[in-house]
Length: 531
Image (cartoon, rainbow, N blue to C red; front, top):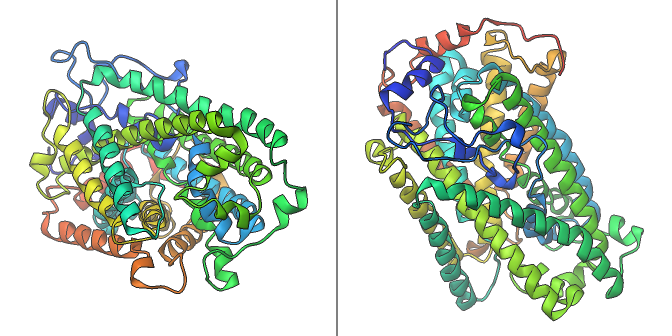
């Protein structure tokens, strides 16, 4: 690639330079359990002008499903369920639903800012390129390296996430073995020919919808027939301290459960480079997928608050996830087995798709030369980034080993998966606020006069989220209850800085190229129109 081309020009030329690169379409399919099929906005065949795609001449039969988030049915029920006990322990019902509302409002604002940036740079298609442009010629290259490493860490850690928490070392070993097996199966699926991917997407979507409907319809009916609903006062106003933290901070820790499940909305913008009218369509996808996730998640939270018994009874069920015995109490022996099988299968499908998304992100970052051994990681085998899949599998498997020494590995991994994304959102908004306040391409999907206030709010909100996700979750803090998310984040940032320092500027994102991209579509003040 030439030294002084803009990012968008570089992406366009990438099809010629690397005709066999794998598609990033699949990176955006049901990412973070957010998308379902909308036939009006996807294509099942590759177009010759698309970027980061398989070469049609060498892979004429390959098809993938391009899924986008508007009009989507979202898997918020799974995210709420696996973090519900965490939210109840930190402040009880009152803290949980109020913190969820607060998280929704400020996450919607952050999503709006990221959507506007995506609209300004529809062909960039990656969060680290958005960060590079937000940082401007002076800081853009540094921002790009840091966010590339952060986002890679977030997705890889997300693949290693597992709902577990146990003080029994032998039982943790059993959980670890089971998790490694399920992770291996999810990774192996990603080594299959891409023609099988669409069936996985169909099956995953089917299980997501079934899981949602069973919880919305079957669970309340069964609750009314067995343990009965909680009163409005008990459902909304009770408090609880299950973390041992001071009461005020215990309440704040509820944001670990609420903010964490709304992170990851940037993924739907990655499909922008392959979407018609991307400057509007992709931006709307980012914003509305977040809105639907938040509203749907809140509905599920309220449902669970009425169906789940008081905190002492709920936690007395024991087990890594109290919902397993809870389903047994409410749905009965046969019913809870069926329900838990649906939950497990849905989570496995989403883990497999998370590996798919993470591998495409790792491939893209390695292709740009940011990661160690980038040449090997970005190698394409039979039209697929198989080495990137192996990297995601290997790193996730190593991270999963944290279950063995730690009794709070699950909450640490929730934090470790959420912190890099929240930090990236905050850094991008900070860059837009101070580095490129008036030198950014005009977006087609604009916030108008709300742009600057929303950027400032997003910086403050994501700083708060990072602080919460860094906090210990079990008090008093000891070696086996330490939240090691800050350690992972610090190590990742150090590696990012080393990569930025040793990689020549002319090799990736020189300042002049960033400047040319900022000017490519007519930089200036943002459009004073709200869509």
